[in-house]
Length: 237
Image (cartoon, rainbow, N blue to C red; front, top):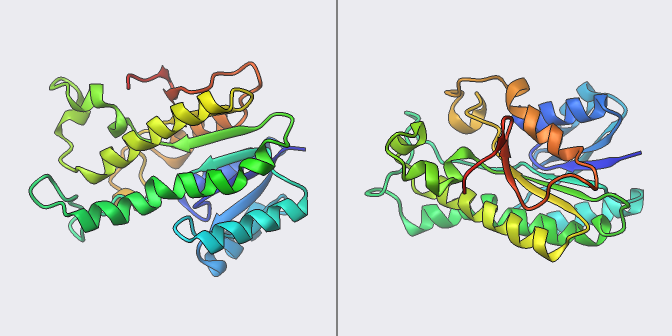
């Protein structure tokens, strides 16, 4: 039996990923900051879903979650899904003229430090697994090649903090993959999916967006590691 933890799993891509992996036979821990929403999500997903309170920005919360999952038997797959984008009420993102260090710090606390905090806490459990997997949910906006290419649709994205945070996630992915060659550790780009993160401005469904997350969460020991993928294949860094 494969046991999986998904951070930020009470809604959106995290919830859909949980639903699909449960259907594939996984037992899934629904990582949620909010007990009520997490409990509701786990109830909808059925008996293979288990709520674990988890705030990726809080050391004590992450450590408590790791102890809970260790006591229950361990972990095989970690999906670092929780993330924020900092859109305003008008769905705008702070551009180069508006972004402040405090805004960058707040976003990095979730999107970057949260990935490191959770991965570090769960590494001992993953290293005990026969087939450990880590999936870091990145973004196409993390691609420097795409954002610097005037012919790319991503070129016009004005935000600074979000692409920078996801580019950092990509680098974290590469370095962890080199450090732990026995694990499958990859970054994935779900695509521009309609979720709360982007004010539901995305152009595809969560079912479409979760496809690459689910695929990489089921990577075998002969699967890729240290890569950056969307549903069509490898992406340029």
